[in-house]
Length: 117
Image (cartoon, rainbow, N blue to C red; front, side):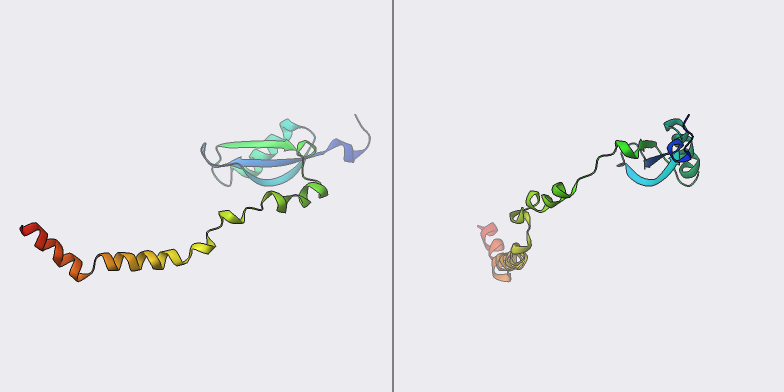
């Protein structure tokens, strides 16, 4: 056993979901000497506050985050302006105009005349 108190505790991240079909959400971080105690602490701190279907406890050192160079590549990955529909705002107005032209009074009255024949 280490004599350094800082080596005894490890940082854990706690994730939970409210139902079996819900997505996992990060809740909080905690310090514990091992995974088993981290899970017990997570249950004690979280489960009495709201309903929980599942809890995950992950050692923070096991979580990989992006480094600076990887973060710089994010704008290139998400360069998909063609997926944005902001350029199609005129279509709603155009469709409404089309529908009104199609169902004007003259058009509706003409249907009655065709049915009498």
